[in-house]
Image 1 (tube, helix red, strand yellow):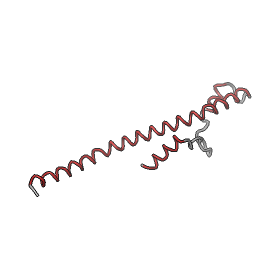
Image 2: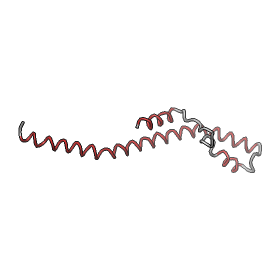
Image 3: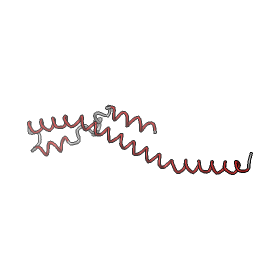
Image 4: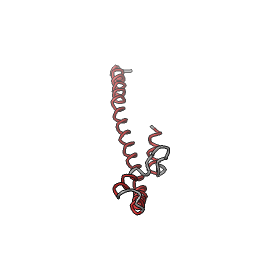
Amino acid sequence: MSTKMRMTKPAVVAAMLLLSVVSQPAVAKWSEKKQASLDAACEAARQEKLAPMRAEFVEECVAKKQKPDRAACERFYADFGNQSGNRAPLFYDLPACEEAFQYRKSR
């Protein structure tokens, strides 16, 4: 083996080690951004499904005068579909939410 080749092997190994150490935080940051993006897509899909249901409950509340005014009905149903006490959240079975869950599990 030539002297030149013996000298470059340690340099290549050191460079590869340095690159792997430096790139780990970048990969972690990218992974976090992707998870946040998937979570946001999930929540957007959930809200799209929940909005008409929430509006229907608010209208029923106003029509039946269950609360003093529309604003009170809107406040009462603002969290409809979210987890509350023993009540499970709705629509986490949507494809966008399944994708976010699978990505979180794979990390």
